[in-house]
Amino acid sequence: MGKKVPSPCIDVCKFSRAGHCIGCSMTKSQKKLFKTIKRASQQQAFLKLLVSQQKKLGRYSHWGPAYLKKLKKKKVKVKITLT
Image (cartoon, rainbow, N blue to C red; front, side, top):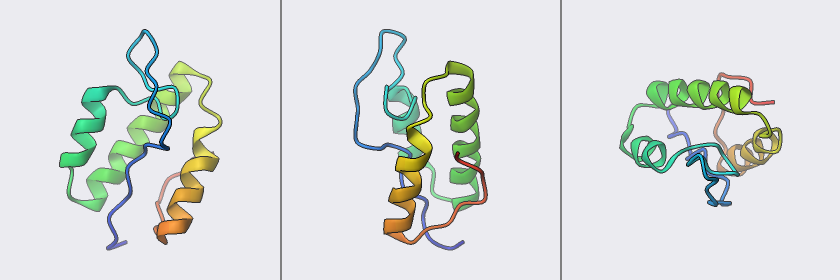
């Protein structure tokens, strides 16, 4: 688990009127916050928060598979369910 968790961003970066990215559901401030988190355990906690946020907002079923692909490419495993 020593590897850094990559950003939840899936390179869509278009924001809705509510201020959430249509690709990953993060707000601009959440994107900045994730960049400041250094510990893998805290990054994983952030991912749990993000998944919960996506469930509440709806319409983010595309994010899990896209992020899993990114994780596989970077050879990183996370301890949460993304799909």
